[in-house]
Amino acid sequence: MTLEHIYYIGQTVAVVAVLGTLITLVVQMRRAENLTRVEITRAVATEATNLQLALFNSPEAAAFMHRALYTSEPLTDAETLRFSLSMNSLLVSLEVAWMMAGRGFVESITIPRTQGTIREYMSSPRARSWWKGARNTWFAPNPYFCAFVDRLVASAEQAEREAPDAS
Image (tube, rainbow, N blue to C red; front, side, top):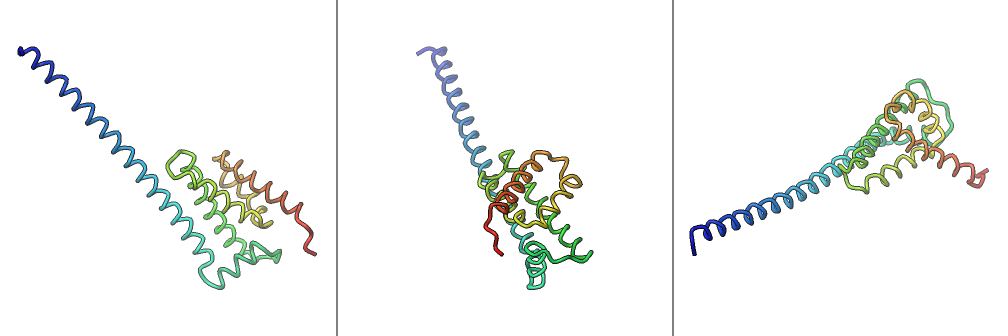
């Protein structure tokens, strides 16, 4: 075996080692990306859960949100502000989750969960009324999210029209 053969064998071993290292790096990067996505998903879910818990954290708060969402009783100016801020905080949190899911930063289960949460809130006529005003004031810079919520609002309104009359 000549020095030239030894040189070629050495070059081949070096190429195999470099390729092995690159493959290992790609596998590690994918694992890190998956772990990051899981962690971001957990953080988004925790934030949304904590926000909703804060909206219902006491009997008084739960009674207020129930009255605001599911009755037609008039709200005072202070209660209207409280409801508006609560809905805005909730929708902003869900908008962030929706945008992150659309970009692949969180697990895909985030979109149906976000959709279910928004649909539940938008089953309230007062929440839908709030959305009609807030949509153009606060959410207009994100027309895709607006269209997403608009579809859920339309679905809630259709379901309300088709529901048997409770009276």
